[in-house]
Image 1 (cartoon, rainbow, N blue to C red):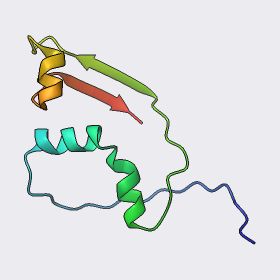
Image 2 (tube, rainbow, N blue to C red; image 1 turned 90 degrees about the vertical axis):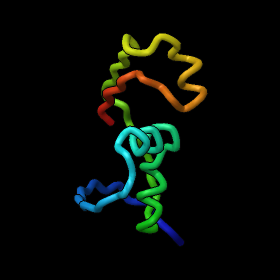
Image 3 (cartoon, helix red, strand yellow; image 1 turned 45 degrees about the vertical axis):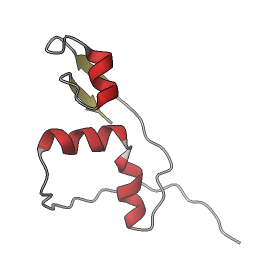
Image 4 (cartoon, rainbow, N blue to C red; image 1 turned 30 degrees about the horizontal axis):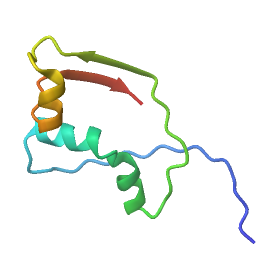
Length: 80
């Protein structure tokens, strides 16, 4: 019978992705890639907390329309 245990851990890995940074950032934010990356190691993300987030849309004259089109010029800074 499976029994759940609470564990904390830390791992660091480095890899290269042949993709423009802005496109990569959009994929990471919009597709919730953290769970998918952890899933590649056959683990499950149990909880994720957003500590802080800042959104700066001053450089985008149409932030909502551009976000829908996937061409947002807004800057997002988040700590998870």
